[in-house]
Image (cartoon, rainbow, N blue to C red):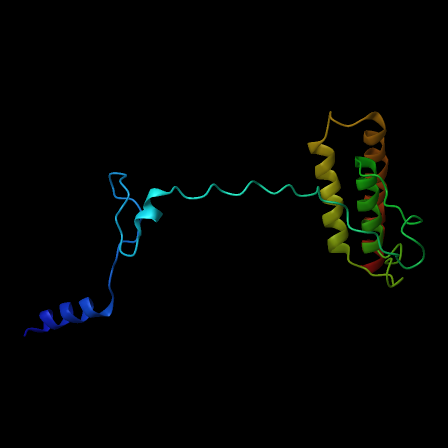
Length: 157
């Protein structure tokens, strides 16, 4: 026996391939072992009807520190609120206002500059699509934030 014959014999003994598909290549039902006449004569049962699930509900509100959920409603989701949130973050990064949780002031001018750049990008990308009030808000807030940033950098340097 040659080494090649031994390899073929070992590979044949290591696994067995059996075709368990129900249909042939031509689309005919296969006659399999252990399949009874009744099983091949009756069609499979229809699939169950789709379940009707209840629409998703909002998770229950929990009481936050400092008041009930109804007292601490979230602000509206609009452009002006988004700009105000970013401006507050910038002022927090510049150490001008304390962090909400710890009430500590932190100085992170790199993050402040990055967030100012985000506001500048928003101003450019939304030009012509903002209301008069939204444009005015950006035009008033951005220079104030830039001046605060410059002031903090002068004090640090």
